[in-house]
Length: 132
Ligand code: SF4
Image 1: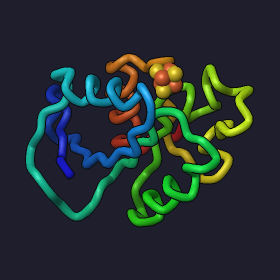
Image 2 (image 1 turned 45 degrees about the horizontal axis):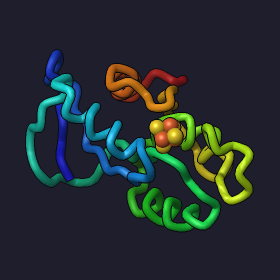
Image 3 (image 1 turned 135 degrees about the vertical axis):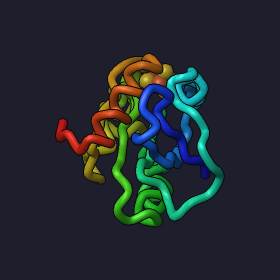
């Protein structure tokens, strides 16, 4: 696990763990490596943010919940249209219609795929405890 600080404000730092699913996995990596965040250390006490990025099928829901429940206190971010609503696969029976149907979500990052700056904005808002 890696701790990142905002490059523009090192007082804001987060530790991110990701359930990386489908194409949003690459988009999240692009956001993490966009230059807006700086790696400050390896390891730590646990993530402050769990990012659910990509398409969640009903079959994957137990694994996603297991990941989330293994880090009590971490805030959940729904990254991309698929995690938030099923995205372009909303009418596919095996696809979940949004992770907020089974877990509390603190931040939603819109887009298919989301832009890196939308992810950074969500990190800033989570870090400042703004409620969406
Ligand atoms: S939101 Fe778009 S880019 Fe992200 S996993 Fe779904 S289809 Fe892929």
